[in-house]
Image (tube, rainbow, N blue to C red; front, side, top):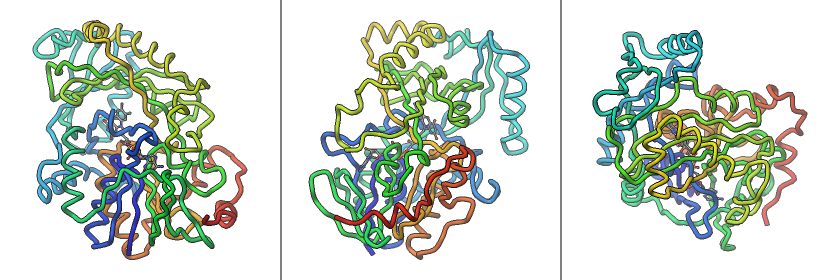
Amino acid sequence: MDILVAGGGLCGTLAALALSRHRLGVTLLTGAAHPQAVPAATRYSYGGIPWWMGVGDDGRTLSGQGLTCWQQLQERHGDLGLRPAALMLHWSAADDNAAVEAAVEAFVASLSPGITPERWERSAFCQGDLQGLGLTCGGAIRLPYGRMDGRRYHKAMARVLGSQGVRCSPGTVARVLVQHGRCIGARLTDGALLECDGVVVATGAAMASLLPLPQAFRWFPYSWASVLPLRQPQPCPEVILMPLLGGRERMERQGRAGLVVDPGLAPWDGGVVLGQATCLQHQSRLPDSPGDPTALSLPGPWQPSVAAARLRQALAEWAPGLAAAARRQQATVRHCPVSYSPDGRPWVGRCPGVQNLWLFGGFRGGFALAPVLAPVLADAIAHDSNVAAELGVRPDRVLERQDCPCPAPQDGARRSSAS
Ligand SMILES: Cc1cc2nc3c(=O)[nH]c(=O)nc-3n(C[C@H](O)[C@H](O)[C@H](O)COP(=O)(O)OP(=O)(O)OC[C@H]3O[C@@H](n4cnc5c(N)ncnc54)[C@H](O)[C@@H]3O)c2cc1C
């Protein structure tokens, strides 16, 4: 059986690796051909592993396994970039006390029993390693974390996938080919036609634009993230800082258009990445023609320059020293689209209405969940079985929430035909 996996980010690489364990013929199309399809969210990610997260079976059976999965992958394949880290969830002196305490309590309740984060008062930010960052935090909680070093991960995965017999190509899928309700392959942007027995779409924010389904862009939304990479190494290289009262998740849950900045930072590419501004717009469709570089800079509801200015302004207040370093280095704000699912559950499983077409993406906490769920998806593909109902791709769970009268997915699938 030959399977094409589209997408060279976290999800595509993990799906391809998991499929290779079933001795299937696996081809990974990374979308890295020039011009590139869309920038990968994985490239700019903090790579933190929120190890307590889980999905499926009410979070019971698949919870809290992210770190263990990465450790097992490393035992099998060598160093993939897993590094020890500490997570600091900070707040500002201006934040409402009651809201902070409620958020701390809710967060602690989501952890395994017996894990109590360390509390950091405002004064702690003026001592030790953190002093060098010159942050204006009001306080924080700190707990053990893990992170994947992105640079190491990509290098290592190129080697590992090759050694496992996965054919890697920079190709970009222009269109998934469907005949009589069955996926038969993909056409690439260079015109090549690849026939296969199944396609896994793991193209992050570009998922909707590849699916032969009406309204797909409403099922698989994405936001734009903006970050500021700096060349200098972080003074405390193992720490990832994120706000306790983050605005991004709330905005994505509510599907409300807007722009929020969640001040944070993480080690990145030998330096540090400062983030993140998130912009959500109601229009949720990436350019129709993957590979059109101009489409990403089109003016529209999402304006990169506005996001960049808001990010710089927020960082000047939260991390004045680093913001000044960014100005000295003439650091450029980078933007990438990030897929998400409004109810927080990822899209793992068959694409409704199209046989042999599988989806893998939309993760919240992808670095914790994707390594756990990639083998689950690979099992289902190899045995032509369904994933657990809790994981299955049921777009109606989102459409019901949005009260959206969309046509049944199957109708659209039947209308599509291979060309
Ligand atoms: C600033 C930031 C910080 C984050 N921090 C964390 C964190 O600490 N922990 C965490 O768990 N998550 C974090 N995330 C989220 C996490 O990075 C994403 O959930 C994850 O990287 C998504 O991976 P993906 O493979 O689904 O998508 P992507 O990484 O976007 O990859 C999609 C891939 O598909 C390719 N592609 C697109 N179109 C095509 C096509 N037509 N044909 C072939 N290929 C195509 C693209 O080129 C790309 O390689 C963060 C995200 C951002 C932006």
